[in-house]
Image (spheres, helix red, strand yellow):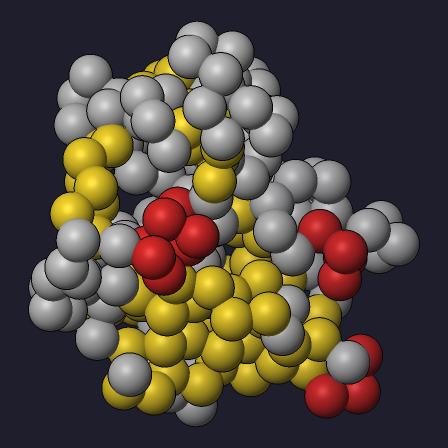
Amino acid sequence: MIICPNCKEEIDDRSPYCDQCGHALRYCRSCGRPGLGRRCTNCGGMMASIDELQQSSNFSVSNSTSISVNSQVGPGTSAHEAVSSQPVSYGMSSAATALLLTNQSLNIRMEGVNGAVIGRKQGPYAQFFQSNMYVSGVHAQLRFTGGTGWSIADKHSSNGTRLNGRVLQPDVEMSLNDGDVVTIANINLQVSIKPL
């Protein structure tokens, strides 16, 4: 476990985003500690996002928050995920599928990020919902697990999350399938799940 440098809550190792506050995390290339700026406050090394580290080499974050960098990339260790339309790779679980949530009429295109919050105020997708007062600040959360694939959970939102018209109970993860429709308050999102 590591401590989020933004909200100071304990979160999982190798998290690209804090699952408590939604802040994007960066890690020191030298000592592996999480931080917020361009340089590490611990050793002065350069900070990088997990996707930047994964693109250049294989790595792992230990419980002591150190990142070990190897010269070769291991097979099947990255999940190609993105926020908006920018491609991003995370060295989290070995995701075998990519998730895409879209609403063509509202010009929304969200690529799944494991652990990412969907909300008006927090998370990597906030720009899509910031002007919609029906969407809660922290509305829902996406998850990927090797056994069950992609899922979504409502995070005690004011106006609810629905999957194919069915209201989700707070904090209960529901599996997502290709062709499903997720409704965040009053916004329908078409689910597309494709193998990588």
